Image 1 (cartoon, rainbow, N blue to C red):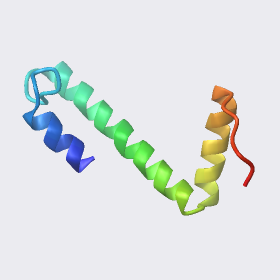
Image 2 (cartoon, rainbow, N blue to C red; image 1 turned 90 degrees about the vertical axis):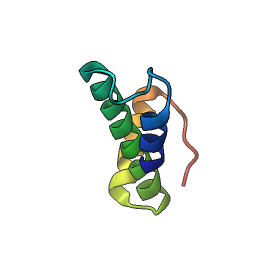
Image 3 (tube, one colour; image 1 turned 135 degrees about the horizontal axis):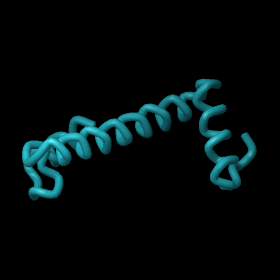
Length: 69
């Protein structure tokens, strides 16, 4: 997320966090999604049972087949 913030602060006006309130909120939302997915991926990689259940449920909802563990 820190790298994304650096890119968002120095990028074109589409990603600029300082152009307007709407763009600021959009960048904040994207940053939270990036952070959340990164956190979920790392906790799942370390084998945290709660993270695995979230990933399994998301895969079922999206109908994505997962390998058996």
